[in-house]
Image 1 (spheres, rainbow, N blue to C red):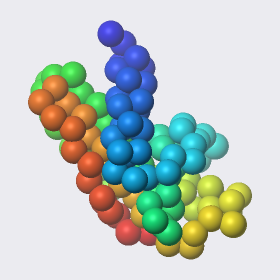
Image 2: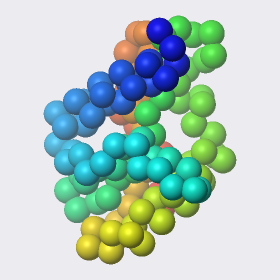
Image 3: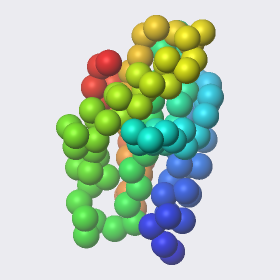
Image 4: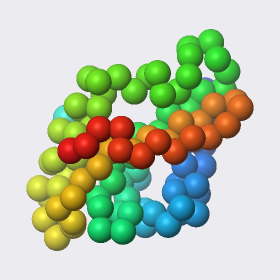
Length: 114
């Protein structure tokens, strides 16, 4: 399976998990010149930008180890731009992560407050 296929399957699984936890999914794979956000959702009155990391084995470490401070800053910049495009959405923003590996799936809330 290619890494693109694995990532797509991981994102679909993440959407299912988030919906079960009460998130309302607004958009998948929002992309602009600055970068991309895997999933954009609402959790109560908070706008959530979700990074999904999927691993099929441990060769490259845990999925959450790939979410670097640089990646978090990039998600925050893309999230700020998305919010500018959608001023009707809640003011409170948050970045979450869904980490999927061969053993388990973890939802990590608020990896970096915006």
